[in-house]
Length: 306
Length: 257
Image (cartoon, rainbow over all chains, first blue to last red; front, side, top):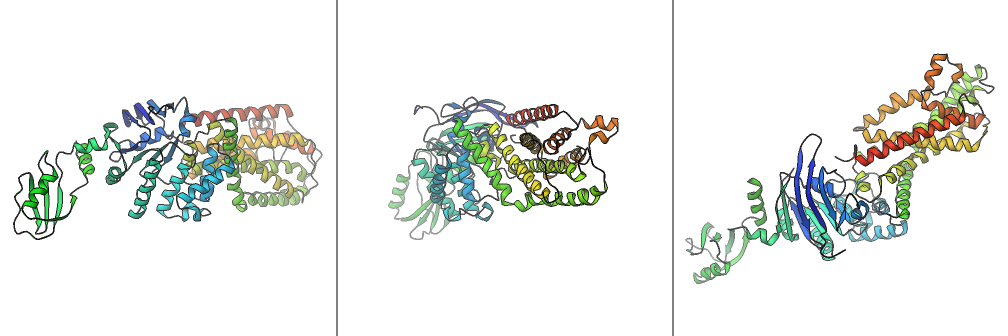
């Protein structure tokens, strides 16, 4: 397949449920090969429906979906072979040992038992689950269950990995280790589509984003271009020494939190460099700084509120 | 998928299904053996010894083929309906739906599991029956064909039941209110020649009658209905149920929203 062929191509996708609810209103978007793409949206926006259709778990009403150029209707076997899905909810057979779960998944893709055993061992080792191979999913922690879902999704070496809220409910340490794993998988050439409610996760991992709201794609762009839409950004500055009165800076609005903490909002088109220079001229030394709020979160909230 | 890959997928599902019921053999194999042993003791030995022969055979010999058939019917049905419904309930059916495995492989994977359990229980019950009677096998090929077709038929029926089931109650309704009455009225305990004309005619509408009758013919050489007609009817039911199952699965009934 050509490098130019999108990993995922969605055209005019419509989903109307039996009760008349229209979850998708003809959405279209592409995901490039090798991309790390965030599909964001509030609850009920249509993210999981879209993923369900791509993975044959939901019947579409109309529209076209192609995976690396293979149509999911006419070339379904080739298309499915290229996809790995990590669903939102745990969906294991609770009574089956985890080694069997992963090995059987390979079998469903036509991988011979001997190769399947080797791949299951390799994948469980990568995900740190080999020691638990004889346990059933009921005996695993939440983080381990998430990793098991990733292991199962990777067993047939999919080129497109779709993760529906993979870090929901896991602690920070596990989330960070999963981020590292996902980045490595992407670095290895896999295209990854991620839905998440943790917007810092999308900002940290993804290069391009799509935002879906009320069944419509309202944003489909690069993360950088999207964040550039943020006209004003507010920073919290931690000072080395106390100040008695608010400093006067021409290019920024300043609010004093306390004698060593300032809230600084640069005026449009002003660079931080200029502002720092003015602080230096006033003999104010800055120890550290952070964004007042997550930038992506701020834009996201503005969009979905409209 | 190539044919070889499809066969690997089928084998995977088949072995998974066998391991599923084999892991809990005390719940899946033993109960039928215990139930049938009680039937043999009470109806065959205690009550049967007081009854006259049926078509030249002792009552015990007459009911044994029907009892073996009843065990195979209920177990092949129960295996598929519970396994497939559990996969829907726990959502691990998605493991198969996201894979390139065609729908007919999914059906035959579950059906082969149901057949394996039906035949396993059938063999266990047959061995149990040897403690109560000297078994005859008039036509072993016919016996194997009828046993296999019957297990396939009821595995498919269980599969369709599971497709429509929305709760665990739904998977017990058909066995309780349809399967058990049809089985008991399917000529296990009597020859339909013993019935009044009206009920004899009504009995012909019961598909289980043809299976029990043909199975009995294969064991003790006694039958009420022409064997070829029975086989044709059983095969017709298999074709209709398979077609129904594949159409439902292709539409995504009960499994895709």
